[in-house]
Picture (cartoon, rainbow, N blue to C red):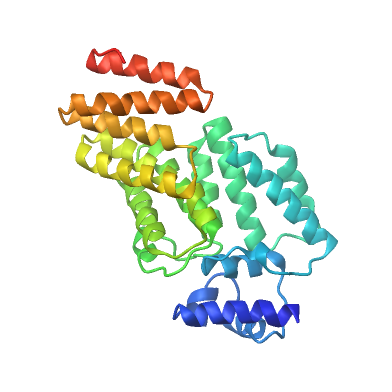
Length: 302
């Protein structure tokens, strides 16, 4: 019954969204395997099924899936690693070692997660963006072997890990000075998340940060009107989704763009809003830095 239910969920969502089996399973499994899953004949390993569900914008944990003790151990480690990364804690070496050594050997979807987490640690803890980029490109190639910006524009469906990896690739390109390449990938992700129907919780983890990164990069280019629109969209999304991690940063960037457009009187109350939110989030140090930045750049005390 569980097999039939999961296969039916995949089939019904795939056909409702008018995706072919080939589009859904490309790089994840063979079309024959997907057909067997949809017909309830075959139950794949956890990460394969999870990837299929994610490309449909669905969270797999809402559906019953029997797993082995070994798969459960790796799943728990994956949760622990993801949780640490989401809290900007990159001390994950021991967890990664345990993840890699779990039995059975990693399938290509599990290897993709391992490469993504390793690259995240390398970027944030070691500031080694070049090596991290190599790992990320290796990881995305496991499911999108034709990976390029041009191919992505034709790619219909992405898993959540693929989205995270492309975001990492964009950040790494920017840090090594390949700015235009970085912007192309980040703009692609913005458009993909804007138009694609995916789980709101997963979208909330990435979309505001993507808008924030783009607002920073556009600001450095002096494209203040675009910065204003990006921040406005990001602020509205944060309010609707309840995702507040980058909320005050988006408010600050919105104010900064207004000031740069010679609209300082409009900008000042927005700057104050950003400071107030930082203080409400018990981060007075960031509030103080915002005030100092405004005083230094615009000769105004908040």
